[in-house]
Length: 591
Image 1 (cartoon, helix red, strand yellow):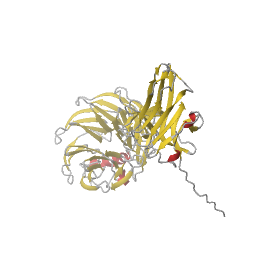
Image 2: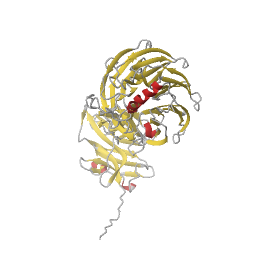
Image 3: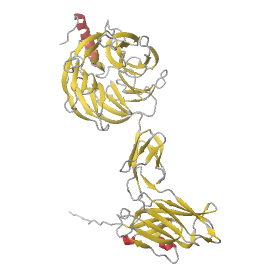
Image 4: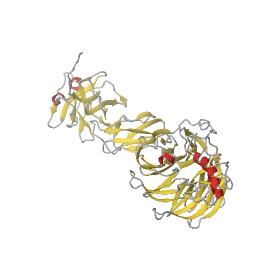
């Protein structure tokens, strides 16, 4: 049972408690604003996943893969695995005697502010079986807790702030009390200072604002500064977060306040903005303040310009939002009756795919970029995932020094997440100029080696051309066609004279194509004896030997993985073979 300091305190608690329980624990009787009355940005957070806790999700703490939820009267402490944000799963829970209002986690312990039952120390080294190891029953209502060294600092409502020695987790012991002047709601610690958000209650707790306390000696805390803020009965400053020289305060009456606390003795407000709903909790990340605003859901404020913060987005919650925790682009929201919500903001997306060679072998070490800011590198399976990509249209480009790709780029739009964005790695184009001796060209060879050290070459005999001609060979890929499967080798062969491309070019003497292939290339070919180099006539694949008149002869050496055939004109060429066919019986049943 609470040990109250006076009969007056007992009366005050009877009056305060019903309204305090309402704070963050249910729908207010009347909303100040509609959730759509602010924030005109067109990019709301993206909902990734949710978990409906048994109680009212009020406070959050994240450590590693686990989120710890202070879940009100019915839920106590919940431990949720959030490794997969789209499918959070509860792993363990511990009932608490009163309203689990907030939680902080350090090392193997969770410290739970359980309102009327005080501070609970819970061993969470086994997430499946959290175990209470110690309790300190604070004089009033434990609302929030922060840690520094061996001490827990507990905002205790009308009893101010309690300094509790937790060096022995099994026997937490109060060592001091800090007078706050209002109803102590939340606490944050930065360096040697403690920042307390407090709001109005019945007299003498008739002030709202921010208190700054020097805790360099936790046994002798010294109040250094105070910044008054708007308030009314049971309303005012409800939460505080500190980044650098600035304290960010969620005020349920006036919205977000940004206070310069570089001089703790003389805090100065530098910016602020009104917000809909009742701001009761906040978290800072990446130039944004994420404000839990009660029935107005989560409000997102751009605070990159301290003097001019501006709300840029929001997410409506079906439950009363009381707290937020942000890591990178994942936002965890305690949404009262709606439980835990996991959002992504900015609403970024992922692009994924695979890079292989022309025979489907995975290629590692390829960088795939969606613009300058977003990239990933393929792993040993050839797979990549580019994360954190904002909505919009992006050009996806693969790169590996000394290599080319098919396609060279992909243009895509997100949302949704883009999957199956695959590329094939190829040798870059090679070229040679067939020079002349008098009116007869000299012999030459054009060749390239692929990712598996297999060579494709074209031998040009003397007299193949009658003018100086530049030949360009560009490795590519080919699609399977009816009855034929691609065997991993394809190229375009083009001729240029005087810098101009020569469509329909023919050779005066046949030139010989030699391709070395692997067992991987022909794994789907049903009969290697029918493996053929073919050329594309614009509609179908034709036998490349028939480019000559009379047709040339294809030579194969299956033991060496070699195919050689003379050709007489240009085109796209591909190594193709008959594919395996599997026939399944058709079973017809009748009545």
